[in-house]
Image (cartoon, rainbow, N blue to C red):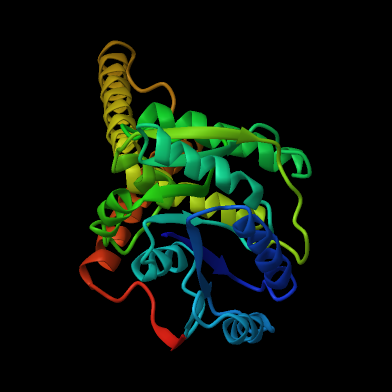
Length: 309
């Protein structure tokens, strides 16, 4: 009997958890020689999410476990915690809102058992139900990061995937504080096959991801897996210095030939503001990387556990 560990990061999923458990258990009944092990991670929810986890644990204490954080540490921390707790031969990451279809699990496990793959991931072929502007920026993010990073991230790829124990152990060796799991899944390598499916709506509750949080998450992904922004800062600084040097040379030559026919502060102020803006922009890029280094060298725990069963 092999074990599939199901990791479910939860943030305000009180309504979704019972529906998720029921749906996955229906799938488990159809699988032979596979037992489900659940790890629900409460990422600082203050609603009834933890109470629902306790109910499921009492209902099936052998297979249902949960970890509750002392506060909200973010989905990446919850996902990493789940990977640390999982004991199964196979490990999967799923959202509690059933946007990751449990009915795909049998096919994913079958591929791992019968083909030469270490991971079976999923990718959405449609983004129905999402605001058009979010879909546009999501597509742009994948195009940008795949051009500037050595780590390829599949467009539309979800965290929902089934991995072998070997791959999970490799991911756990990457214990960095600043985490971007989509990039980490790709960076560790291993043979991966992607299954496509159409977007599913949430079964209950509301998403905690808004446009701004997704934007910050994408910036973190770019900074974590590419040094290209630093190259941009260097390039802009070089071009700015080159243009300034040419402008100084032009002013000197003009003064030597024609004297100084014009003198105005407006043009000078504009130039100073322009150069100052470029400098601040470049400092902001550098500061982003320094901030990552600052949080990394503190060696603070990625999460703090308040309750576990």
